[in-house]
Length: 68
Image (cartoon, rainbow, N blue to C red; front, side, top):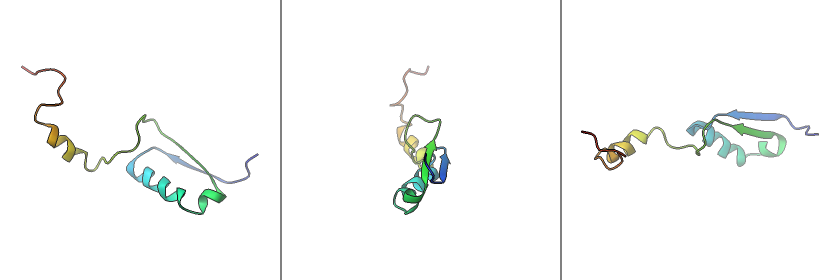
């Protein structure tokens, strides 16, 4: 039986990912059971700069079909 308090992180946003990385380096990992879950199947990504990334791709190289 686990007697440690449980710390639950819901979601895998940039903030959640950063928080978990800080927890992994902190003493709390020894005193708490850390549980995380999210709906996304991919690791967290930089949503703040996503539009800058997509702007580079707007030259038509990512379309799967040709628009008429």
